[in-house]
Amino acid sequence: MGVRYCDFKDIDRGDFDAVVVGSGFAGGVVARELAERGGQRVLVIEKRSHIGGNMYDEADDAGILVHRYGPHIFHTNDKRAFDYVRRFTEWRDYQHEVLADWYGTYLPVPFNKNSMEIAFGKEKAARLTEKLIETFGDERKVTITELRAQDDPELSEIADFIYKNVFLYYTQKQWGLTPEEVDPSVTARVPVFVSRDNRYFQDAYQGMPAEGYTPLFERMLDHENIQVCLDTEAENVFELEFESSDESAPLSAILIKSAPFEGPIVYTGPLDELFLSRFGRLPYRSLDFVYETHDAEHMLPCGTVNFTVTEDYTRITEFKYLTGQKSDKTTIMKEYSRSYDDPKRQIPYYAIVGDENAAHYERYRELTKSLPNFHPLGRLAEYRYYNMDVIIGRALALADELVG
Ligand code: FAD
Image (tube, rainbow, N blue to C red):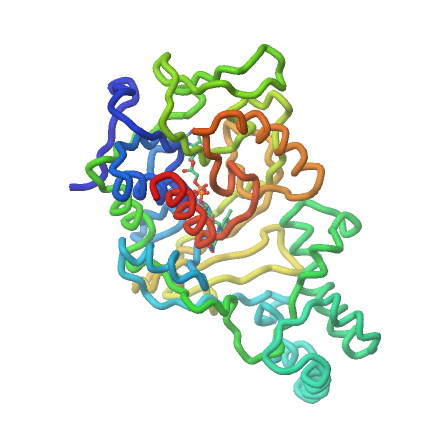
């Protein structure tokens, strides 16, 4: 039958047992589970004019399927999450590869035995690789910090090369930082993969929805107990009641159409927005995407190229690699990282994690703890970076808790 869309002004709040804000994987999975497993009547409120959250994809003017909020590749070791999404679509096998553009030469990322040959030449690479294997073993992922800790000039040379040519400028662009501001804890995690495996992910289950993500969400939300209001912001349909007029007083109720709503409210938007930023806005990084369609079968050698030493954009993605679509045209997308200054015009993409921001988030989270039927879930409401599979797992766990 398809998704049942509705207009918020026409709904009767008594017709619903649960309200879900947002229709990405967090909201979509919970809505489906409450409806199907719990037999609950679920109202989904989505501020965009489409479902699917950041996974939304559509055909562009050239007929090429593109992702509108950044390239999304599914990969997981969580069988439950993969089995779950398999219910709603066929999957095509796709193993993502990323290359770093190093002054016009391509290096596989994560940096591996193949990258080492390109960067250092075969002979030196063979020596370095042997040393890596002797020190850490074959097929291992080793961090730059581990390399430096060996106090060996050759291992340090590899670490320095990767830091300067693959990591530093990319990270500065991505997070808008000076080299001094790049947190050592982030640098510490940059891996070298002692392997010939050029795949970006090594997870057991990897792939792309055969017809795209949007049809997956259309099937997930196609349930007789689910209604979806698009173009509707939670801030405009919720009335928040607090225990007192003090700005730090906890929530006592959420009203919908002037009456307290007592069923579960699963909220997957930014918590600061819900509280009209009373403690100031939570910091995020935003992105601008610039699309180009070319009369060529392919423009890049693989799905994504990272620009690690040149250009203002961080990376380019060519969607046809991800989707497997055949066409004599192709669309690529350049990704520019931006500060998040204007919530009306921009989208919050990446929470900027760190102790100070976590404490800032916690102030908002505290306001909601008094309300047992309010459940913040997802990359925005929890102010964390989560991959899709983790969100699906967390949404299933919340559904287990709510409907058994
Ligand atoms: P979202 O998908 O953002 O959904 C939240 C929904 O809530 C949105 O539809 C939004 O419009 C709606 N909403 C927000 N506020 C309100 C409100 N006040 N009222 C009503 N509606 C509201 N993960 C991977 O596993 N693989 C990848 O390759 C990958 N690539 C990524 C690339 C980029 C650029 C980014 C930023 C993330 C990527 N991710 C990837 C992570 C992935 O996007 C998240 O795991 C996923 O979006 C989480 O789903 P969600 O439902 O929590 O959030």
